Every structure is written in C-alpha cells, then in structure tokens.
Image (cartoon, rainbow, N blue to C red; front, side, top):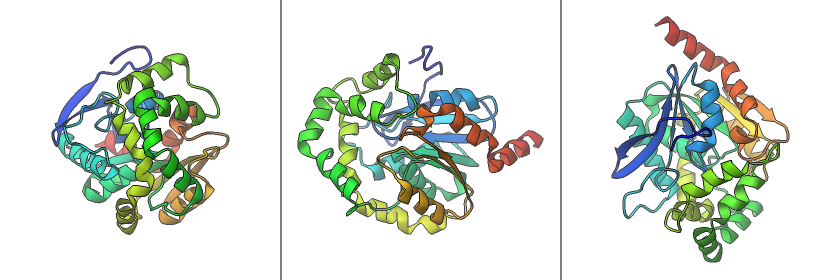
Length: 291
C-alpha cells in the first residue's frame, strides 16, 4: 500500500512461517515501532515521516494485522507476537535498537527486548504496561466484556473495534474518514479481524505471560527509557505511568496533557519532538555520525 497518507515502500520478510510486512525508512540509529490494537504500522506514519531524516525507522505489522499474513494455526497471542518480533530483529540483523512501543506494542516489545537483550539499547514507552492487571476493575470489565464471545463476534462481523477504539483513543483530534478507511481496510474481512478480536480477552487470559514479563523487568530496567504519556487515556492511567517510572530509574517523562491512547497519532508533533530532543537518542545519532 502506498498513497498520500502512507507514502512508504512496503517490505516483506518470512518470519517463523509468517509473511511480515514492515516499513523501513531513513538511515541512522534504528527505531523499531510496535503498534497496538486494532492498528498497524499506518499508526506511525507521521512519526516516521518526521524522524526518517535522522533515524532509520522500522515499523512492522504483527501477523494478522495490517499487511502481514499469519501462518495457519497462529493464535494471535501476545507471547506469540513477542516471539515474532524477536525473530524479526534476527531476520533483519538489527542492532543498537531503540524500541518504541505503544499499547500492546509496549509490553510485547519489552518481552522481545528480554529475549534479545544484546540487540536493544533504549526504550520509548507510550501508554502501555508490563505486569498482570487481573483484579483491577476497568481492566477486568474490559477483558470480560470486550474479550467475551458476544463482543468478539461483533468485532469479527462488524469491525467494531476500529469504529469504537480509534475515535475514543484520540482526544486532541479525530481521525479523518480517509484514516478510518485505512484502519478498516486492513481488517477488511471477518478472518482478518480475528487478530484484533483475540487481544481484548488476553488482557486477563495472558496473565502468566505478563507475570513472566514483570519478573524479567530487572534485566532491562537499566536501559535509558523515555516515557511519553497521554494523560487523557481511559485505559492506561496515572498508576500505570507511575509504575513504569518506578520500574525504569533511568527514565525521562514527557506528559502530554489532554492526549489519548494513540499518542503518536493524537499528538504526532509532540511525539516527534520528544524523540528528537531525548538526549540518549541525540548521543546515538552523534556517535553514528562520527563513526
């Protein structure tokens, strides 16, 4: 796909039997962008356009999302996505990587960092989490209702996650009709919507995976971390942001007032500026320029 809204060349690589679509723009220190639900690499388009003059911007689609095709039998579980990301890093030979993860992309990305610690040097985390959330009321409600069989049926048949999540997850602006069409077309059939239908229920069902990620956080807690937080998000709240701050002592916080879940799309200029001005990335760019 290439048009005025997504003017990037599409690349494909075989990873663990999946055909994984990715964008690879620019040169410089590597930024690996990971999306959440029900989105794909299109979500990062403005950030990629704004940073590819100075950085190599790589954004993949998880199998079943965007333009990636899953291998038959894939269950679309977050632990599976983490393995795909780790193998994707191997397949492209990526080194000295900065993870940029939002929503599911954050926790899936952190799991991938734990699997490939030698490949990652920095973290950028936006409205995400890294621990089980069972017992927390709004996560329990979401996991049980949106992750339940009746709602999953609606997701597969009517694409309701795109129609609901994308407007609700933007607070500063609303996605245009053309943008919404890109999200809808990427999940254009009931079969294509299975991936997005599975994840809400995994908020509770993947507790063991989340506990594993949490238990391994000390192994990556030393990494320089930039936390970009939309404080008008109804999903991830102040307590989650504070817990990330406590987890990563070498962090810098950029709080985006009035910004929703999809920080990179709701406030792209602020998101771009946060990365450009972050000292660890400036040092990486300067070092690469000198070498």
